[in-house]
Length: 151
Length: 190
Figure (spheres, helix red, strand yellow):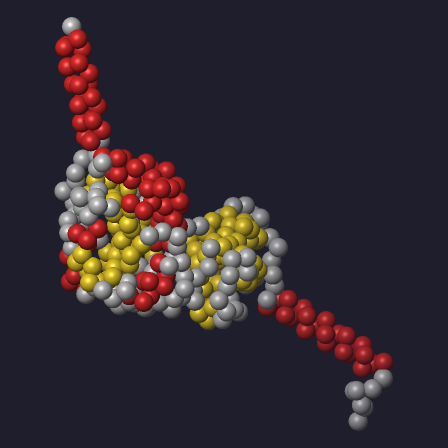
């Protein structure tokens, strides 16, 4: 039997396999540069909490309408998107499963509007520390976010 | 002639003082109450006679409104300068299940202001909420990691040193608005 572990053929097959692997992982977890996160910041959790609210602006530079359909955070147990709305002088929070990104437009996450909530931070952050979050879009691509903590 | 002049000056002074006090009507909202403070001690609003009081209804798991308001009030205290010691802030929780005295004490201590967290039984809190015309609602959130969220009114109540409600600040009130309002309350009580 031909030994596949030897010879120049092996190196060529290894390179093709690596390229195929990289291509597949790119397709599955492609980061998009057409949708960009800016000005991301997070509130340092209160002393009794290990949860934090994140705010940012997400710009869609494409001519297609997009949507953020989920968020994830490796340094926390869970991440969600929420919307705050003033209803008859009361502030109401609602978990949301989608935030729209208009074509050539943006979505703003700011206090009293949308925010990302991360729960169960693995380490207590201080002002100036950063946290990475990934926004997953409806086309399967992801948008990386790095937010800086503020008091 | 001099008599008329003196009378005119006195009348003008009374008018000016009355106008100043008339700018701050005594509101029908509010009144005395008793709750449990963040040290686990019984607290009565009447114990704060002689100080202006700010009252806010919120909860410590609130992501935006409450930390924003408390940060704003920290700036208010800073801008009040020497008069800051004449103002006490009361933070009344509408989530007594999670906001124990220890939680209130720890989280309020994060902000630079003279604040006392207050909690109690649901009937006790509901009584104070009704007294001040505030409102809150526990909303289950099965789609979230959090079991529920609390929708709550965002008005900041300002009481004079006699315990009477004088100003209702909306959530949009700026630091400057609140400082000016408190200074007017303190000035009208001297």
